[in-house]
Image 1 (cartoon, rainbow, N blue to C red):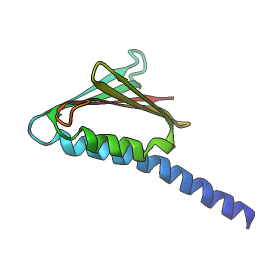
Image 2: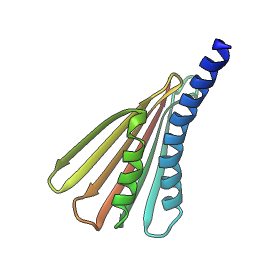
Image 3: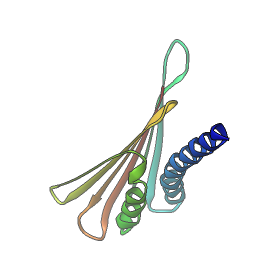
Length: 127
């Protein structure tokens, strides 16, 4: 019975971490298909093995959605290491999620104003 409960708890914790990734990733995917945004994906591979070493996704747009992205980042802050910094009228939010199979770095840069440039960068590094 104890094994069953421990397994259930581990599964629930893994699901919560995956949901964090999915909520930020889903928001980026949704806005990347809208007009007025720029979305790029870069994949770095090992030349010998062709295995993926790093994936970098970047979404940039001029809009008032910086607060929307910030709220999603803040909601997921419990899933990893959270850092915030304000300098030169720019807010930078960083969420690092370490998992056994990969590390994911989520970065949000936005103006202090309610409208301005919003940039979301997602870096995925398989282990």
